[in-house]
Length: 72
Image (spheres, rainbow, N blue to C red):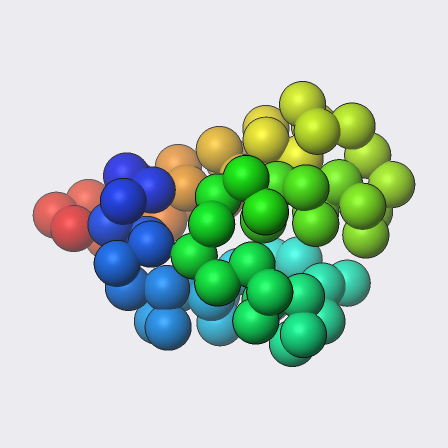
């Protein structure tokens, strides 16, 4: 899944992201808005992992979204 697609439809996709990263709060998602770098940073912060690991988790999530919705 392309991040630009996610960013344009953040109001739809952030709920899925909240299920994936349940340690992130509603306030976190509000602050993230649709900014990929902010999401990666917040995943790293809340889960105590390196940014590279957070980026890998995000890439896995995007890949899973593609599998569910291959034509989006």
